Length: 113
Length: 114
Image (cartoon, rainbow over all chains, first blue to last red; front, side, top):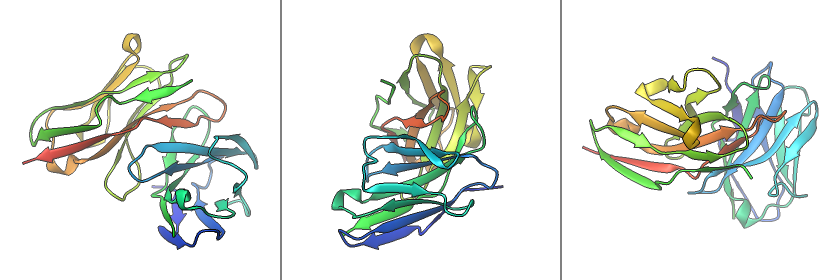
């Protein structure tokens, strides 16, 4: 069964460093998302991406965040200068077409120290 | 604004007992509805979904959920809980915009006692 793959599963980074979280969506999917879950809290929408551009972003997704689909298969989330409060589980998701379900990856746990 | 509420932060049930987890949503139209389960340190697994049609939907692991439009609810049920069902359960709403983002509820933590 096709699945969304995220790497790494866990990343530790120092405050102020740049970090890139990587996702390989399901191959024929067209809509891509990043979500965040701070420990013990609910899952929050960050950004959606379609047709090589951001279609929607939340208030959380400030100038420190960016997304990219560099090669037609990967979908990345970059945090330019990490803060302690960026520590969270980050989930990538992809969807084939509208009015269907999104499939979530297993997440990357980011720890900023 | 769209929102999802799960009134119960934490529920404890005995193994073999029945379970109902509550979910209410606020949205201008009938959304898509989902229940996800998350074991500690793990990702999100889809239990079931409602898009249209029969308001009682069956999912994996013996779960079912019923959509009640009049109550804006989508409660999750299981007739007999197993110890392995202990996890965090998230109700979620898929918004019928062009890009179908998902809004998650705060989650209900389920503990199962032998």
